[in-house]
Length: 436
Image 1 (tube, rainbow, N blue to C red):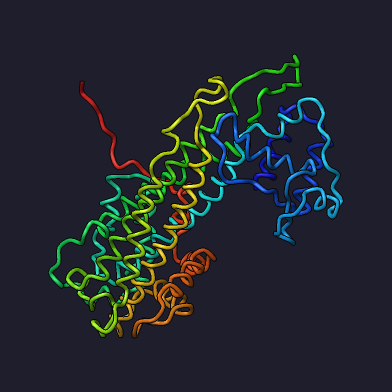
Image 2: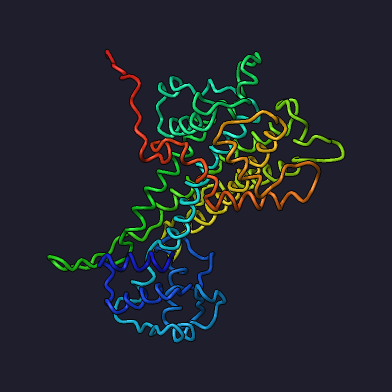
């Protein structure tokens, strides 16, 4: 990814580099070259100097390289010869042109935000299954509630849930079974989920926009302007504060999906709150059921709270105080990926527990889309009759979520405008008029 992004930057035409040098980078990328990049060592200004230097080092025939076909890192010169790529011989300005920019932060950030978009949708699916297993009321999804607080993310999540849960088109026996139960309100982790999941979706989309711009920027210094009055100008486009701040926000936004998911996992396990057998297993005492799965989710949530400390709140002076403010964006990006990975696993645990809750409510059936999700989960994780090695099930469902199969299953049931935040149109419920 870094190699592709660096080629894209060089092709903007402001780096002061020969076409033949860019073409060698491009040839290496098309040949499947994998550069050796240490994950530590960048302060995110002047750009990602250390990581991008390692990228350039391999293209000079020094250091280490691997390929997509052979992922073992070997002598870079040997790898380039095997691929028929001539090592680069630098000309004036080219050394600096290859190492100045934010492509390390942006490459990791792009992976983080793409995975974050996916896990945000899956969090709504797991929420819907928990909603059914906990026999929650659908009244909180009433469009009028969300119409008078028309945040786009909130509207999006509420619309998705209405599509997946009990309706005239897709009735739920589970929902009908507690129509007159006398319970008035559900806990916040269910009742306020559209509001909480909603802002997480909006944060993710904001970060997506920042990174989309960043991926297509000229981030060199100095910049060369060859058109009109030709000039070479020093500036600060290499500074990583934009992606650094965005990725710190991404960590916070995605973490909240895991934070509230863990609370629903607790409710599923707790018989006082769920009205289900303790720890979601029939023969308690002899079996611990989902107790340790909840401990795992709790541990991951707590770990994410540490990762949510913004790396970009820090700065340290470098380069004899000339570079006296830096972004620390490399760590922002690394920990954002870690938060997303942890949340993927937390959501998998919630979905596992919620499906087990549905099993304990049989013969009642949930809605058509939720039954299809249940069947998909059960294809990789059978119902929990007695204790077994649970990490296998967690791994299997995590892989299932990452594969895209769960979203593919529910996607036909979700209105097109509720599939992505960017296409949702929200009408203002009223206009405030001031007499002052």
